[in-house]
Length: 305
Image: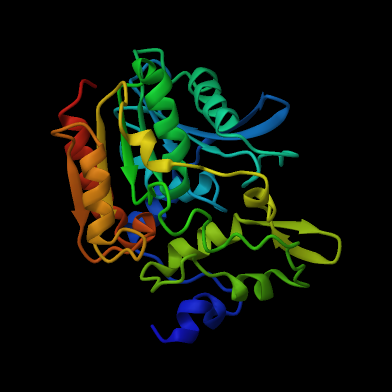
């Protein structure tokens, strides 16, 4: 991709849907159940697949994203698991909050586990991408006995004094309103900016990231979330999980350089599986979705189902 295409990967389609492979079309055709629950005064959006009563699997998305990021992935597990994905407060179809705390995000995890029936057959598996790894590991540290295992996907856990802390799309200003959905899609880009090999996935998540407002279309996530929330010493969340933990990262991810991967692995319990996915940058769900499915299936095979 050219630099222009990286910054606006969907502009070339002028609002049309990009072509997609059969596996993706079949996965998206597996429509989820949709529901909504209240957690600490905020409505939380839930998507779910598979039968209640089966082992549970909870999927947690990254910053500025939404539950629909998992729509191409979740159906691959629905035959064996009761699968659910939530939209964090301040993102997707969930309500915004006046302020955000890690404790509220942890509460959202366990409320969705209960509401979606993910704990009917015992503690569920939890998988989190990027931002989602912070509340997931807070949950694993404080209440890990209620989880079967946790899988981190390309979450950049930083130590005290390490540069960073807020994501690159923490704009801290109101979203622009676009007069047409085509113009809004043309402005969509990933953060951090990167090549987007699966444009059909990017189109899906971009469309579901938009809401219609007076004057046109704008992004659903709260642009001020990171002015009201701090992770703090993120790496401390890795040190004493009360459930098994695995680490997955994209081998070309700008957020998971070898030194950061090594530092995170040093904090995790000895023997925690750690797997790099080749030719994947930060957005592993988009870059290598089928490789991710295979990787997760391999990890799950080592845990009770």
